[in-house]
Image (cartoon, rainbow, N blue to C red; front, side):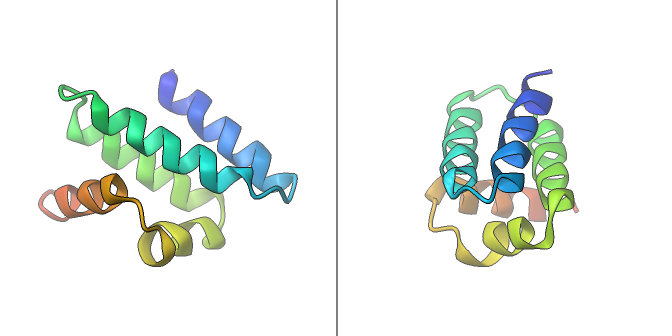
Length: 81
């Protein structure tokens, strides 16, 4: 439920053509990474659902984000793909 609410907030800001979606996404990744027992499968689901919102979001996640936690999550996901 938590992940769905985060995704909804990000997609709503993206549809408004607001730049806040980047901030929301960065903060949500930071939040998820602070929960040490958060299952990797949930992190994968979160990133996958974000990428499905729009190709611009996918591009940002994989190429433009400078967030250390985003890089960490992507590295962790490479091990289970």
